[in-house]
Length: 365
Image (cartoon, rainbow, N blue to C red; front, side, top):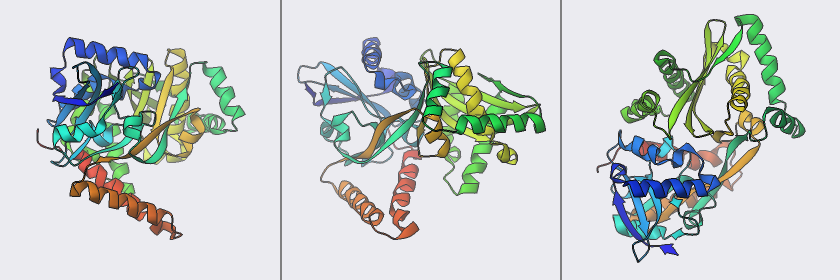
């Protein structure tokens, strides 16, 4: 049945029955294991942004069938809650139910709903996609030895390279060790400092110049909930802090959120060494999955053994803001199809930067 009635509520207005439905629907769908699909994610975002709402989809009889966490950074645009800090987006649906995503625009009076990382299997939203990509996942259900053999059979040399770098780091800097579930606020501050330096060096937008982003990270680090928290993994070489990996966690699933290392130690590839240690730790402690997120970086391609399809695009109306969005995608596609060298990617890069800035902006309630 199609859910075409939409009500917007604040995350803290979810009733106990709503939360029970959310939990049951999530457990029924193995593709909703990501921490981003926990109701606690939407509620955590709502504590640092006042424009977060849950779209509750119901049928004509009033039976609820889906929850969709949203933010409204501008009067004309809706986005998934968390914007650029949210690596998985989309609806939490009852099994066998489908939602009328166009009804969302009518109910909210907005011109369009932009999305970037919706599960490709969510047809109601994915039918509006303009691009397909994947999130790279390390599946560890079969254990450490099976994972290592799988990577070897796939022709990946990343594990071998990580062990070589670890030996060099151990020899030159001191014994290598992983501190799991690190509770040091100084280490968290160091991670953010390294990350901000990285943004500056590479000419990227520093998300931590927006107060809500830093507050979100701090809040989850200091007061995790039963279903959502962050775990900080620190790699040391002797007494030297070499790399840090901040992960979201929900149940047996880790999602790598922010990763950084001491740039002075780059020649040791400390981030890769950290992953080698983290994978072994995960297998020993019952973690079934480490999600690396989207992006075709070398370490992701070589470490991941699962690719989970995602999509990006927008649901539009006849309003001008929607028509302009369609023109932007058309221009991007036209340039990317032309043999213009680096120029071919300019419109796409401009769109991504625009989306990032919009997603970081906090709209009115």
